Length: 270
Ligand code: SAM
Image (cartoon, rainbow, N blue to C red; front, side, top):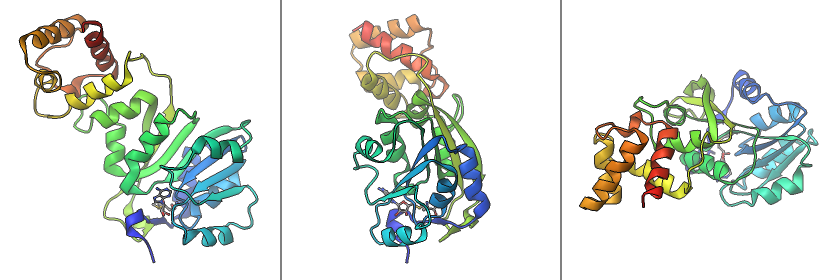
């Protein structure tokens, strides 16, 4: 009795569960947040190794099942909440002592992989590690390097906040029910950005707009964002020259650092 709409694909392979906990290097020093515990398979492995575990499950039908299955553990809090709506900071204060490292480990509901990750990264909460399973193709986009076909605004949004690496690939056969695609476990290690954009919103708008038409040059995408009037063109040309970026290049060639330079240059020359 699974709810497809909630992305319910449960893990059945104990080795994969162990590998996820290993990838997060969970220990007694860690308090761990889990998103979508489902029937509690990963939750149990986390509880064996962590100080405290807090798991957010949206599906009310699963709450009694979870309470029952995990009743032997006294370091698990099950919270029936939507991870995108809950006041996470307040829950952390209520359940954790603030003296442990904070990690997030989850087999994510795939219909909201990107919203959950961006929500966590933009929350301002400091995680020591975020280790999450997701669709393989999304994992490839999150971790893509400049100049590759998977590199885009999502890679930049995530890598602006974190060092993002695929830990391992998980075949679809270890889930019940079996999804159509393979999965991957990604480890995000939060880091201070190499450089600060003067205006984060303007920076992300530039990045999104630069990838709006992947086949077009950066230049043509910039005209799409900022307009084509002669004064704008002149300003864009001047800034590109200042930061040493060629007009004919495609956005997928630019590093995060170059996007930040470009964004800051546009603000300074406004
Ligand atoms: N962790 C379990 C496992 O590995 O077997 C289940 C993972 S399953 C892919 C995703 C889980 O997230 C489901 O139990 C689903 O009900 C739950 N879920 C879906 N949307 C959610 C949301 N917005 N907030 C919290 N949990 C959610």
